[in-house]
Amino acid sequence: MHVMNAFKRPLSRWCGLSVLALSLLTLAGCGQESQGTPQPRLPEVAYITIAPQKLLMTKELSGRTSAYRVAEIRPRVNGLILRRLFTEGGDVAEGQVLYQIDPAPFEADLANAEAALAEARAKLPSIQAKAQRYGKLLTNDALSRQDYDDAAAAHDQLKATITALQAKVATARINLGYTKVTAPISGRIGKSSVTDGALVSAYQTVALATIQQLDPIYVDVTQSSAELLRLRERREKGLLNPDQANQDKVNLIMENGKPYALEGTFQFSDVTVDPSTGSVTLRMIFPNPRGEILPGMFVRAVIKEGVDDDAILVSQQGVSRDTKGNPYALVVNAENKVEMRQLTLDRAVGNQWIVVSGLAPGDRVIVEGLQMLRPGTEVRATPVDQGANGQAQASQSDVPAKKNGGGEK
Image (cartoon, rainbow, N blue to C red; front, side, top):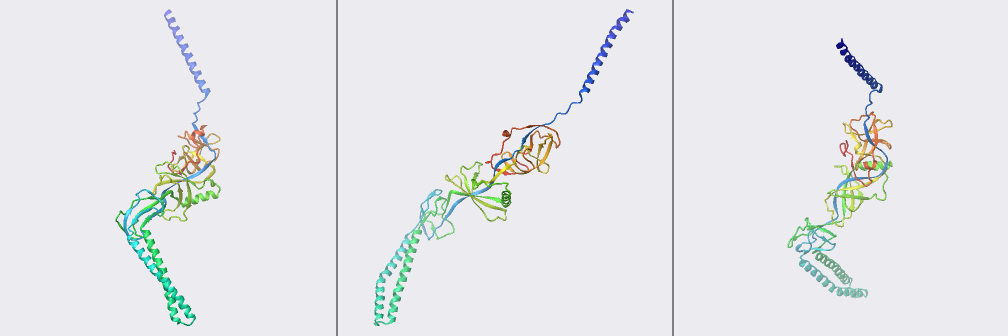
């Protein structure tokens, strides 16, 4: 009996504890149901706010350099080269003697012409006096008309002979001067095609040497006619205002990618479109005092198109491409939901794109947290420091917008 009572007391205690635990679990379950299901966490994105800005529009065009003036040196008389009087690859001045052709034959020709002229001049006083005397006699009827006519004709013939001989003397003197081959321009001379002792011909096909004036120097670049029409259309619509103060100023980028220190000037645009390339030639002129630019170099000229007073720029980080390669951006609307905007891009300026259409001032373009976003998705948006993101600089050069370029996603 006592044993049964002792067994019942622990059992009753165990049952009580079990009922208490079950009650606590039931209350806990009811508390969770009263709080409801946890809400999903909103995606976090960072955005930049689009604001128009004043931008100097520039264009990089490729081309090559050419000498300001080029002179091919050729002899103007036949003869033998006695001496070459310049250093190949050096600078020469206008009028400097470059070659000496053997002058002896030309000195003899000059002496002969001068002697013939002197002989004719010596006869002139006698013939002239005779013609004058015959004229007086003809007046007094003491001489026939034929005799006077013969004397007057001889006088006129001698005067004509003197004139012809004077021309021969001048020609001989000119040819003698041509034995000294001089530089027609100042500049840098190249290698010589002949050496001392070479026989040359007047106005031969092969030049003796070539002089090129390198300061200043030309830069010729090409631009498509379509680009010229587009630029003209934008100016006519008022989208670009010419920068009158610096419109003709041009900068240059050398073959090694470094900018040239001196600024050039726009000269002219060709009036003919090349039918094979559909482009026109633009010519600039640059100072070249140190001779850093050589003819034939491949360079890039940065020309100024005009000023866009309300340019829309967006970070390349915020521009993506669809499967067809068309650019688009995701923006956060007033309800903090994602919207897709199809874009039309002009070109890149630094790390930004110039947007022609698709964005407006005040739009919030998502630049971080773009993964797995879909239009209509509600997000938690925070602004990005615009200064850190990098705004476009008016002096930066630009490159055309491509379908797969420029750090886009």
